[in-house]
Length: 392
Image (cartoon, rainbow, N blue to C red; front, side, top):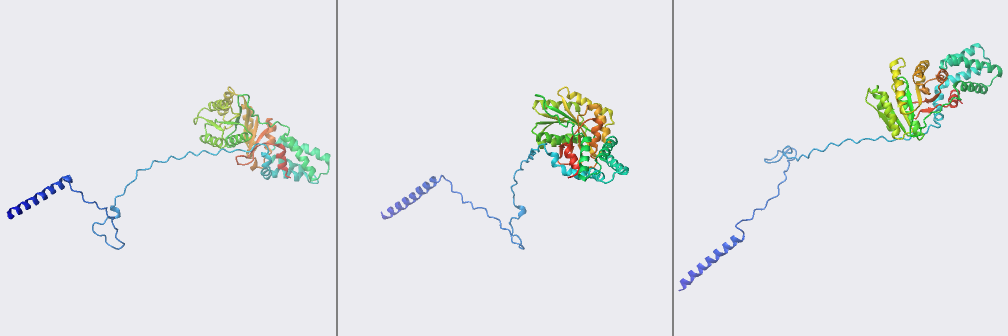
């Protein structure tokens, strides 16, 4: 009986163990948990002089992540700062010292001769030679010398102050202190004033156009520039640079295009934009080429269909002397010049061309260039000019 009970206990224990194992098996879903994943080991580089062990990762074997290529950065458009030019009033006074340095040969040479105790024929010949050398011209020189000789005889003995006053009065007479040098740039109601700038190559015509825009803007005018010099590739770009600096709009056409068409468009744009002045830079024309001169006449006629041409400024280089006179005469026959802009007056002692060109054409010098700076163009003032010639 006892043996029978022992067998029953053993069978019950086996049954319990079997039921418990099945319970655990079904509770875990029949799946075992995955083993933990160890973090990757950082490869250790061998020190200098050591041989890398097997399985070590070298720098050139490491995988490098290449970033995507960056988008190209477009260059920023640089807008030039708009300058505020000084007004025209007083410009020539500010530039007087520069003019005096370059013109001392003419003024002081004449003063020295006139201040001599005795003025004989030889001295008067020297005075005449000095004036002719300064490009005063033969006719004006003879008129000046004759007038000076007459007045010296009346005065008799002269102090240096009297000689200076005498010479100043005579120079002002010959230069024409009473000539109207007004630059006509007032708009006509809703139509702008039009200034046509003409001249041969090399006189500084395009530069003078840009500087004139600065003068007018400095006086409070709104200006439109017309780049009608379509035959010289750099002319329109040069004028564009001048316009950008002072905020003046520039109207230009295709290279080699019709200059008259560009001039007409510039006037139309100036009218639409309610500008005060339109300045048109024409091609630098050799005065010996009849066809080109005829084309300049065409530009003027086409512009006059839209507006009145108030000024035709002839740009002359003061260093060209009497050759500039011949240029002036030919241009005057084509476009009826109203004024002269004399450039490079600071670099020559031949300022007497002012007298000769005015005498021959009856046209006043209205503007003078006294340097290479942007504000070195000034309205011509005879008093300041003569004082600079004679010195203080």
